[in-house]
Image (cartoon, rainbow, N blue to C red; front, side):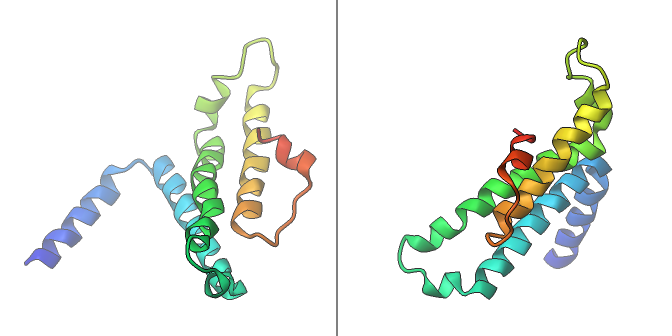
Length: 125
């Protein structure tokens, strides 16, 4: 009885969430999953002791919301472009231009061995 209630609630929640927001949730969840797999495959979790284990999760907790934010630059382009000041031309270009390095920064934060030049990362901030 309770399993069917939980399934129906999950389906209702999935249908009620707008598709733009679903993509942001998906990007954040995938970032966490990829980062966790990376931590375990590199053996960092097994090597860490005590409070070093939660510290390993820090870059993932930084990257997951950043993934959602970067995804919104592509799914909600008009909304993001509308907050670019009027005196700056090509509003949609700037939305994409900030979204791309932000998304690239997510890869660098979730995969510690992925190195992206600092000047490319600075474009997103």
